[in-house]
Length: 556
Ligand code: NAI
Image (cartoon, rainbow, N blue to C red; front, side, top):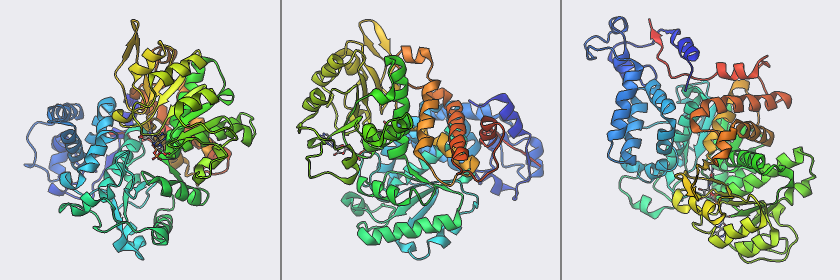
């Protein structure tokens, strides 16, 4: 929720729109619909276009939510919200912010996944930029077509691994759009500073290639050096046209994501949310769990089930955070163990991808999760495998035998992919589990006690980090920004939240959380000499002053 003072400050701003008449109603950035006052209607040439009654934004919001609830299903709700965003941006963000718990699952996971699967069929109005193979050699010009010049946050995907849904090609555009709506809704990054981009390199999805309504390049993906050259040109063009922009990679396939991050993270201001954002929010969950188990992160043994982007990202951040707590690099790496589809990741294995090697410690082979669990004796078990129901009663039972309070995170999305449900975790651990999941679960009951477990939702972290970076003009994104953000987020969970099983503050406090995370991020940027804006006296007040408020301006 936004405060009265912020609303008033934004409302006091007087704006002279650069157009008149009906064009105003067709520009979502300035349109207020029925909220234009009689005076504004007269001055701006709007008389006659609007019904008589002047509505408040509260009334408009109520009408919007009525329609939202009346929609036939979640996909229809997504389409409705997209339409609202295209008509009246201020109202869209007002509705999103005031109803964040209800709306986040529609504009972001899981419903945005369904929207992407159907994107070509629900497509109405373009948003963002489609940079395609056709634009090679002239990407700068394409980027220059974008009407806003001071872009601060770009989210780009090549659509190859959209959520857990695989290659959706250009249909993946729903992801950068949804993600940037959260940068604005959750943290207040001004919408005009955000830019969603779909890098269209083709698709290998046969059903899309055969779909007569498919919106993207109707060819197989370009690969190898061809692909790398295209990404390189894109990145250079972004740096030239939008030199202050943070470039967030999103939903690239595993084989590309790690490579691109390693290649560009020291060169440009970039991060990968699937790797680093997930890590930030999960680490916050660990810190909160430590408040319950009264232990220190550096003393934990963490077993990851699944060794992809999410798991490796978390392990890398745990390493950075525990090194900052005083562990050597080797000791920090040894806190983390992986089980992948072939069993325990250990140094004797010859089939390991590059990102698994730092965590391949000397150990006898173990062929499955249960035997690895018995051998490694972890204090924390994290599922990021996409393999449903793999945290069986035996697995949860073994974790509970090893630990008085077993910390169990079942992160795989969507709900149908979770390694176990909240109810299973509490029942099989006899109410002892400290549990979090990737998708929300309804409250669980064990022997009369109700547990409302928390969702390890990336939206707690990336919007705040983005706001912090945009506010201070940081030139790079570091692990320290993410582990400091994790600490801030963990501290926001109250004793009451923890007592009922929730490791995160409620989503309704997300604007507050994002402001604190932005301040922590900017603080790191100043400390490490990465900020380009003058250092403010009060960091929190500074980032708050940069937050967009969905409040109508007054027009003269
Ligand atoms: P990924 O495809 O990079 O990794 C999946 C990993 O699981 C791979 O290493 C694969 O080898 C491994 N795996 C597959 N079958 C297995 C088996 N039978 N036994 C053990 N390991 C197996 O995917 P990513 O991005 O790491 O995501 C993994 C899951 O985590 C997804 O379901 C995703 O939705 C979820 N996730 C949750 C987040 C959150 O809660 N905030 C954020 C990001 C991802």
